Image (tube, rainbow, N blue to C red):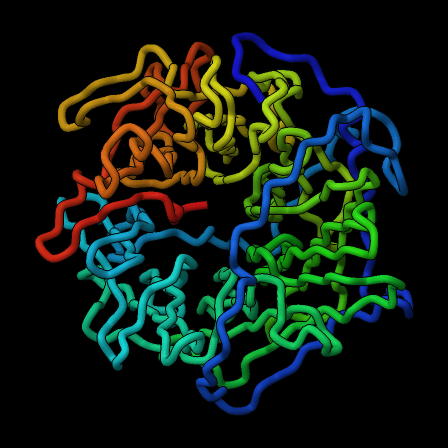
Length: 572
């Protein structure tokens, strides 16, 4: 993908990339039994497992043009949007969207994943409304010491009104043998409690998400092994474990395990269930629902499917009754319809959280908007948005990596009109002649959800960036392999006006300085124009500009030196 001025026309045939059908577990075919829950009645022992390469990065797949895809199944027509959405209905229960407020001051905290020396992976927490900041490392509870891992999320697991932080961890017991688990830092009026950290052993985390699946006022935690399972010859391929929140925080007692039964599909050679997780009330019944992405492949490269499954929440937690699924298929050899990221947010303000799928490896990247519905996942009223959608700046070029539009996603009211917007990262976007510089696109929300109309794009070529006191040195020059948009977030750090936008550039400065020097960049973005109060209409002549840039040197700590930003922002 290549950023240019102006607006491209709609890409004809975008929907021909997809063959997606919604199915209900109650009507599932015998050939594909519905997922089965397994409840644990006792705390699982911490069992070391052998190391493997399941979490190694996948090779990037080549792009496919719309004309190379073959239309199949239930999708008809070349447009990128279905008919107008149904009339909004009142929500069954008003539920506040989970925040990232660890100290209870009504404002989110900025949490940045980073690598440090010493310590390996760490989390830097900057508390809003004060100058306080801290770096979280794994507690020294045993030798050899644990190291934090790259998977983390926030939720109020004990129901005290403060967001807690759950972080995956591991330690090597012997060569090739690891112990995995999760550390939970409780939130409180003083911020995260580092002196009384809870440890949950025996959990190898590939994906993680938090939400209140049983509507008891305490968030639950869902974790997966990244889609795989150690028993590749067993009856299941991947599983998701759900831990309940209690007044004492998360517990493994009574944990629910959801498994994807291997379909009776001749020639099946790969099945992954749980590559990504997200939780939110998509059905509007007051219970958060669990959405799980997966992937399967047959004996030929054309037998590639992306799968997204919704488990509705209930008084007993995630339920297998009424499970719905959508499945995408590509017919061109060497390609996949793989969902890399998901977010749930009520973008059309009808009381049900809508699902947005990031599919960056398809034809330069696209996002799929699916409206929440009482029946679960449905294709009705869907919308596909890419950089050929009217109102979205950009055009397709011949860069073999594509732009990876949809690699990262975040939602929140960044325009100040009271409707959530969609922030999309495209970390390998070509900017001018600079390959893999990256870009970030803000797609404004509407009462019908995001349409692409009136979108804004930011690259480091942007003119008119604001320099203000304390903002530091601004670098507006795109460089090869900066990867701007590797992670994005929308947060409320000041409690007033439109929400703040953040974009990570995971390799900023890496290639322009000596080995071992710190690299990575966090850019704060906002719409440049009249300062609107939240809930008022936005101005029409706004631009998306940088107002602050922060590098590792801007996060000083006497004991730990941050050497790399590039492991996600909390706030999707």
